[in-house]
Length: 218
Image 1 (tube, rainbow, N blue to C red):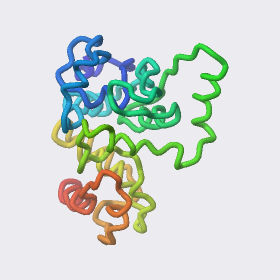
Image 2: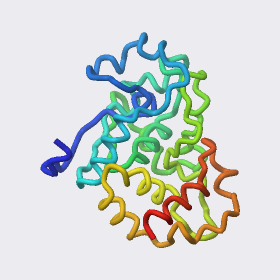
Image 3: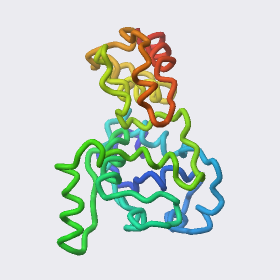
Image 4: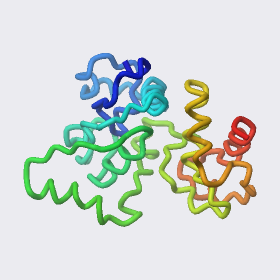
């Protein structure tokens, strides 16, 4: 449907635990303990990544639901091995390509206030990089999560945006080129100082990505 170009908005369940599960055809399986028990060293879902990139390429905005995974991502010892705060969950959802807004279900005033804390939270409170260490189930080594830990860049490169364009290229080359053309600083302005790589909690080859982007887009 997204690839027809006819879909303006997609409501979709987005959180870091769901994004690690591949081959899920039944939404109920996203909440099944056994599905998570089988995960060892799993990589982020290629299917979900393709969907996010397709939405971006075709101008389909995503409104996320299940941002807290029905609340259990907030609970210690939950089935995913990740324990996050509301602010971290919202930050993660809004960092995904093409996500325009995130829908939060609340039952109490305290839950509303916890969700709204996103608006005045510190950078440290927004940081969701702890998902990398979750129970040893997940392997996010070398995967850009578009979290902007790599910034500031002395050459003013928007590293996450460059990487998103690079990730889009195979699926939607023209859209990727258009996205890249809007950026203020090209990847070729990278001076290979390494400050980005030393700050990246996922150990992404940022310098290599900038070289690949410069070769593709410039």
